[in-house]
Image (cartoon, rainbow, N blue to C red):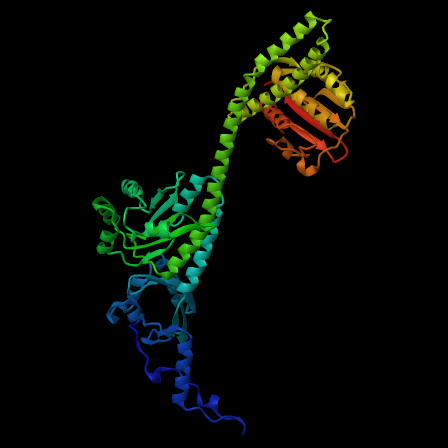
Length: 566
């Protein structure tokens, strides 16, 4: 490409006389060449493009500078193919390839690339050109345009960036993982450094993440992370402004004087100087009217200079990030609350079980006293009271054992003591023990077991599974018979408990195995909602599975499948 120059008025193509000759009396008069030239220049102006020819003809229009003004270089620096030196190094190969093909095949070309502006910033351009051929087919010259498409490309890239950011930030509810993902996102696409300050568990702001594009700067990264986000009496420090006032800060050119004003002390100033901040912006992380932290982007080694459009984009990113951070924070707090609740229930169940033993001994003493004096008028009352007390004691013991089992399951401390066990015998023993209870519900217990089913299981835990399923069937069986079937199918022991009671809605079939889950109102049916949760945990610990087949009003069948060998 030859060096550009201002276009002479006579070198702009004009409309031919024949094309403007009136064809009838109603046709307008021939437009003078000067007016036609003025019209074409006006059309060029509204197109907001740079027009050029390989003969050195150029016209700056639409407020855009010419090539020399745009690059800030004299004409000599743009002679021949030297203009390619101002194309971004990543884009130059495909630009040269497009030019070579167009020149070899004498065809038009269109190529996008980043061009270095006089201020050092790279701007996206779209270059298009067509060859003008002589009669013998040789190229007389090239005529082309260069269009500034920076805003379009930037919007496209940032929309894609926000989409990727949304996917990354929503990939996990883990709080620390969310913060790490947020800090890595802008580097190096938007910044050389990213600093993330957040609200800590104690209500104080802490520096949570620092990421640098250069991995060799890890020692400096740790020093930056050691800086306080809230240096005393330094309201001009951008992170402080964001965390305290909830305002964004944009510093296009960071000078040493500005760093001295913002520094907390000499060490703080030394760290900032070694980072080499040239341009900086900080935006607050706001969610539901609360300041959760701040996001700081800094340019150091690159030629990037932040502008208002960068600040607006960072605010959009911060808005989306704040929602993800807030969700992760709430999830963390919920998990911590659940952990504290489980810890409390574990301690409470231990403490509540302690008085149950002496209470049981007192009831035994009362019973022996009543037996020693059968003729006493108080003996019937004592026996009745002891029976009622033992019944309530068994209820309390069952509840306390359930809470203890939950704490073991949650903490991963559920242990199994496996031995050779006949499942049929276990079922018979549990049925015999629960027969009086079944009589109160008027639900006979029926066992279907043709042969022994022997496997390696924890006997006491297996009894617990059978007991929980039978208790469940009696409670919700609506007075119908409860059938317990034991068999071996495909190398697995199979235990099924079937009732014809109220049944379970399909959408509740999976939820009822969760902790404290209930498919019915607690007003009509008691319990803590732990029986099926504990049952599932024991069965899965044994390497098996439990599921239910049910429909509302048609009863339920719970099925347990256990491997015969551990």
